[in-house]
View 1: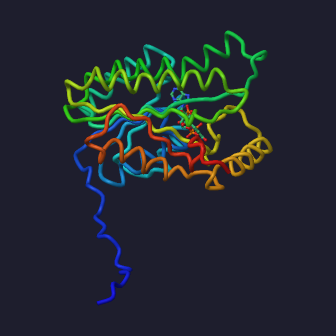
View 2: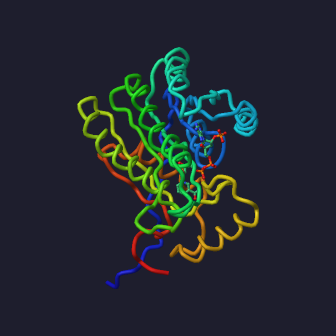
Length: 265
Ligand SMILES: NC(=O)c1ccc[n+]([C@@H]2O[C@H](COP(=O)([O-])OP(=O)(O)OC[C@H]3O[C@@H](n4cnc5c(N)ncnc54)[C@H](OP(=O)(O)O)[C@@H]3O)[C@@H](O)[C@H]2O)c1
């Protein structure tokens, strides 16, 4: 009997409900962070998310439009704000199942243009803020919980992002070292490494509309899939690592349309 090719699709299952789960997302006001908050609350989790300004937090809260999301003003470069965030999480959520350390900024500066001040700004937000956020919040995490950092697809690089790329390499290292340190508590630690993602800022501080359009063109041209990723694609990968990938820890997962994978374009 001749074999026929079935067009039957593999069975799909509804995503696991996260009702009763608690999460924190740093840098959750716009872009990928907000998409992660939305993906979590859509599945029923209660989420505290941070940003630096009351106005941006209010805009995010209006857009999210759910009682499961709780905005907290906390600058990740400020030790006292991180301490206060820890206290608020302990008071309001009690504990954390999922922690997404997502805040970040990039600035294009050549070797000659980087100053001690700009270096500190970049490292403080991306690396120092990420580390001390985890130091403060990890004690509140439940056994079986997980942490997901946001790094960057760094295997292919852009000139002018040395401080940023270096800071994100530090975060990639935290994901591995902390995966080892938190293993005894059964807390998994991973990172997503986005390529070009269509966020309001494209992850770069103070881009003009014209520069943004140019950056998007560059992204389309250099990404094997020929397009920028969406924030929903990032959120899906982040939640996969946090929730579904129960046998994965210490991984940095590229979510980059093939950008850093050496497959050419
Ligand atoms: N977009 C890309 O193509 C791309 C590519 C690779 C990696 N990334 C990384 O992915 C992450 C998200 O990027 P995105 O494009 O979604 O960025 P975004 O749209 O600019 O959002 C950044 C978020 O971080 C928050 N934030 C910035 N500085 C902060 C601080 N000091 N303390 C607390 N929160 C702070 C911002 O909040 P407020 O401004 O409201 O304070 C905002 O919620 C970042 O880590 C970025 O480096 C982005």
